[in-house]
Amino acid sequence: MAETDTVAAVRRFNRFYTRAIGVLDKGHLGGPYSLAESRVLYEIASRERVSPKDIIAVTGLDAGYLSRIVKRFEREGLVARARSGDDGRSILLTTTDRGREVYGGLHRRTIAQVEGLIGALSREQQARLIHALGEVQRLLGAPPPAATYGLRPLRVGDVGWVVQRHGVVYAREYGWDERFEAMCARIAGDFVTNFDPQWERSWIAERDGENVGCVFLAKGDETTAKLRLLLVEPSARGLGLGRRLVDECVGFAREAGYETVTLWTQSVLTAARRIYAATGFELVDSWPNRDFGGFDLTSERWDLRL
Image (tube, rainbow, N blue to C red; front, side, top):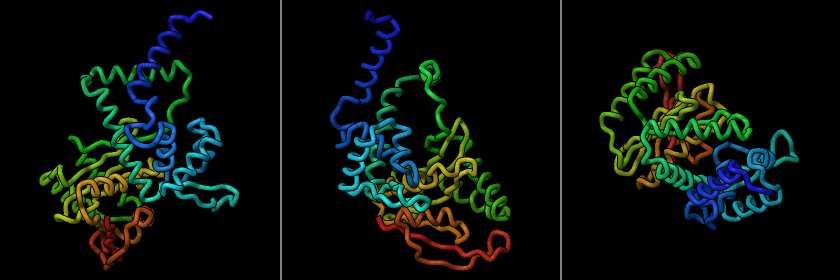
C-alpha cells in the first residue's frame, strides 16, 4: 500500500517527537524507569487512591503489563496497596513517601525537558503551538481532555487573588471574618517582600486559565521551613490537588536542605489535616484561638521531620 502524504507527515512527526522526548531511551528522563513505568507512577501519585482498572482506562496498558509494573514499584517501596472500603474485591494503590519523592524528581525533570523544547519560542509562537497541538487532538478524534491543572510560580496579580480567595472561601465555609483575610494579606506580603529564591517557593495551580489553588513555602530559619496559605478552590476539589501542593512543598524543602517543615492550621480543617497526616506531618501542639470572629477554634502546629 502506497504511503500518502498525510501518513508520511504523521510518521515523520512521530519520529521527531519520540526522539525529542526520549521514548526510545531505556530509562525515561535518565532515570531507571521506562516511559510506561513513569506514566503509571504519575497516575498513582497524582491521585490520592487509584485502582488498577482506572489506570488501564486512561493509559490503555495491558493488565498483565500493569501488574508487573506495580509489583516492581512495591518491591522498591514506591507504591502500597490496600483493599477498597467500598468493594473488598478491589484494590487501591497509593504512593509511599519514597514514591512521592521519586515522582517529584520525575515531574521536575519532565517540566525541564518540555521547557527546553519550547524555551526559545516567543509568546506568540507558544500560543501557535498550543493551538496546533489542540488541533491535532481534535482532528485525530481524541476525546476532550479531562479538567486538569498545572502548577506555576507567582506572577503579577496572584497575591491579590490568594488573599481574596482565602477571605471569601473561609468566610463562606467557616464564617471567619475580615481579620483572617487581613492576616493572609500580611503573610503573602511578607513573603513577596522578603522572598529568597534559594530557600522559598510558591505554587499557583491553574486550570483552563483560572487559578484554582495555591501554597507557599517560606523560610522560618536555617533548618525550618513554613508551609503557608494552602488553598484549593471548591471547584477543583477531588483531583488530589491539595496533596500535590503539599508534596511540592516537601520536595523542595528536602532539596533546599531543611530539616523540618512546620505549619499552622485549625482543627476544623479536616480535609487539610488528612493530607498533612498522610504526608507524614505530626501534630505537636494545640491552643485555643478566637482571632477570626469569636469562634472557639483550636489552632494546631504540625511538623514534618525530613
